[in-house]
Amino acid sequence: MSVKMSSRQKFKNIYQRRIPHHLQNQLVWYVVCDTKEEPTGDEQNGLVSSSYANEEDKGTTGHLSKKPKPSNCITCLDLLNEGCTSAHIEKMSEVIKDGDYDAKCFSVVVSLPLTLPLRIHVVWASLLLKFPEFSKEHRSEHITLVKDVWKNVVGPKIESLTKKNFLTGQNIDFCLQVHPTYLYDSEDCKILDKLCSEMFTYRRQHPKKFSKEVYTRSAVDQVLKSFSDEELIKIIPEPPPSKAGLSYEKMFCTHASVYVAGRYNKYSRELPQTPWFVEGERRIESSVQELICHLVTTEIKADSIKFSSSGREDVDVRCLGRGRPFVIELINPHRIHLSEAEMTKLQNEINSSTDEVKVNDLQIVSKSDISNLKEGEEEKTKSYCALCIIPEGHDSQLLDQLKDIKSLTLHQKTPLRVLHRRPLATRNRAIYKLSTSPLDNHFFKLHLTTQAGTYIKEFVHGDLGRTTPNLGSILGQQVDIVALDVEDVELDWPPARNR
Image 1: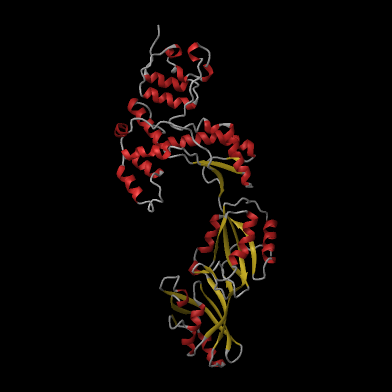
Image 2: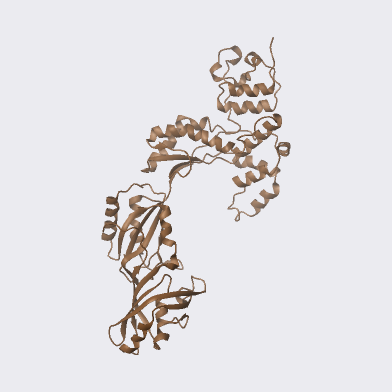
């Protein structure tokens, strides 16, 4: 005598049998919907519908001889079936190989279409309404679990093809980014308009505010969480039909930034620190940044760079002494393993390529180390030598007035020459040491040690009274500056290397 199984027993048996994943969720949905088909054959024993039978049983009985029609999983859209095939794994492996990264380890990051959280949420809502006693554990992290299962299936297989170690977890420097797309993703998401038409209408009406993205993961999550399961199922009684599987065309590799630090000297008075443009037109052909970064970027094969330094000098100011500390962030580098000898060779190549700039102490540093460049910026001291002129002439007694000055506090309004790019403000800056060396009756050298951020040129000529006190007001004479050199930036970073 045949025994008809309850829907709960059918649901349990789906996961006890070795049913292919791409059929499991489909079967769960049919059980949730309480299909009324009469059981025959294996179904009389509470197994599965004949059209979704275990693939191992095909052809064993008359009613199973017909090959079932392929069906995409209604929740993951075959991510855990088609997305794990040898063809896709080989394709992902080729992306890593073609990238030519020298990283020894990798992780996989997957970003799924927005329709998946919608589908999974609807299935969970229906399941819990049908079986209230069913555990809600892992519901909120279902998407994460699906991703983790997929990554742990494909990761080891990619590892064997690429000979790079597969790692899981966060903060892995080298990642294979996989972004499966679904042809009907936007169409599926339009169902959400039934839940919250005001939000999505507003997002359509303000494309600039939302970067032309009507549906985003955060917006979808916000809407789904604002409705109870009962309210949701009344409006969306079932997940959208699975019209197709996922497409795996969007894949690329990324590597965390690498940081190269050092110190530079600048010997030219016609070279800006960074590319100099005025109203879109380039003023000077090259820059300190370009002379250094071109060879570094070529060697490390980075997509782009960001250049930072401990302050900056004007175009007509030289930077001497130990040099100015700098750091280059190399974005998405393909080469990250450089020995000390290779860094020395790279430094020598930079120095031999130009006589305007020289680099010292070139080395790879960690991201945490670069905070040394900016921390305590205003507490740092810098030493300068300025060539000054008093047009009316001077004698030794006039300059002797400066010997009695041990320290000086300046009040500097934003200089007129930089007012177009910096806000108007009055800044207090300190001069710690001050001395002079006469050259003749008109020219003399001014040696200063100051707080970082002090405008030296404005201290000399006064900037039409915007810096007080200034050298002219102290001496009672008109004073101007002819040339300026930075002699030292008192920051012991990065660590000195053998030069």
